[in-house]
Amino acid sequence: MEILKIVITSLYVSLTATFIASFFALVFGMFFLTKQFKLKDLFIKLFDSFTAMPPVLMGLLVFLLLSKNGPLGKYNLLFTPFAMILAQTLLVFPIIFTLMVKQIDKNALRIQKTCYMLGGRYKDFLTLILKECKNEIMTAVTSGFSRAISEVGAVMMVGGNIKGYTRVMTTFIALETSKGNFKGAVLVGVILLCISFIVNAILYNLKGREPNEYLY
Amino acid sequence: MNIYIEGLLKRYEKTVLNIEKLNIESGKVTAILGLNGSGKTTLLECIANIKNKDEGKIYYDGIEDFERVKNKIAIMQQRPYILNMSALDNIVLGLKYEGLDEKSINKRIEKYKEYYNLDFLHKNAKKLSGGETAKVALLRVAVLERPLLLLDEPTANMDIESTLMTEKLIKDINKKNKTTIVIVTHDLFQAQRLADLVIFMDKGKVIEYSLKDEFFSNPKNDLVKKILRRSDKND
Ligand SMILES: Nc1ncnc2c1ncn2[C@@H]1O[C@H](COP(=O)(O)OP(=O)(O)O)[C@@H](O)[C@H]1O
Ligand SMILES: [Mg+2]
Image (cartoon, rainbow over all chains, first blue to last red):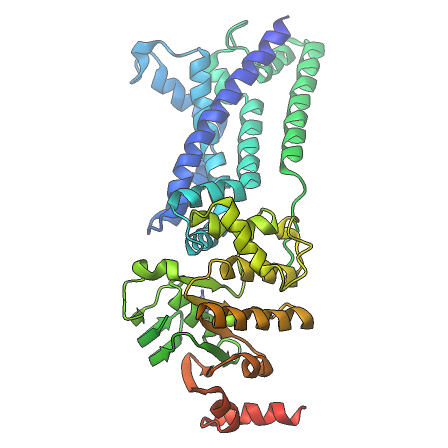
């Protein structure tokens, strides 16, 4: 039963974080794609470098933010699922955002020109680009989720690995391994692997086969 | 629609387009010939406002403001962006944007079905062959029936039969709707069959511009003379 609770907490935290990060990545990304401005490349490079942010560092930042003396200390949010979601959202946002923008940016301008030439408006362009780049967007979201569900540094620091509350699969594995309980660790490890596998299988099915692009 | 161009300049690393004055006549078919890289695509895309010009003016029926005429101009690009949906959906997209209802859309499409064998209409347009893709790209702008139609090498990937039917389509559009058509082509015979007027471009400049018969029988520019003579010899 403890394991079920752990799996649910894991999914809840990582799915929520991925969802929030994806939402902002999409809104922010759309703005980026449709506007041409000087610092655009610089911005993308900046976010790109954040994708390599070590989870423990993100954990530390959020810890400082939420700890007693931090700016948000009075809300008592440290060692709650909220803290974990916050840390993971910040962790995966740059990943989802840069993957999305880099992939979509290749075609955005051509899609925009085609759409406008055919008489479409801005909202038509947004609908079109979401449809056209469905696969790229889903790939970016999945990469974000994979990163969130498998990271241990950030959730350990800001969640505290509290049994029945903030304990997730990765922190469970780390703890059980250190206690010498390899059986439990391996079991949860297998579950973690299965979840990644299922998520990828669903994605693969939704995507369908890639169309040929041998000419255009 | 009449197009009048004045002092048009487009630069990348070098100047790729430099046209002092050019008038494209309303209701006519004008063919643009020229070697690779002579600026034909750039000219067409500047007219369609897909590329921004660096200098100069383009008047559409005397109007300089592109925004006011944009829904009177359609362009088929040399490398068209085909959307990831069925061929048919690609073709009707513009009509949907124009707010036509389903009945009018079907009626409109029906007119264009006689020209090609359209077995591929329900296939995903990204999975089509080069020639089929070209037909989708051409049809999706032709069905809009706008006063100015710009075509950048529309038949480059088509078989002989489709090429001839495309030429028939272009002629019909020009006759029935008085559409002004500008077509870029490398096929001298196609220009001969289709065009009222012929433009020859070289290094971003218009070096020959005349009525079709005049162009083929009595060209003034040396390069054009040489090219026409060479193609005669190869017959
Ligand atoms: N985006 C671009 N950046 C740099 N050079 C370009 C670009 N687009 C076109 N050119 C150059 O402009 C010249 C004219 O190109 P284009 O108009 O496509 O020629 P074509 O007559 O074959 O259609 C070519 O030398 C081409 O390399
Ligand atoms: Mg070209």
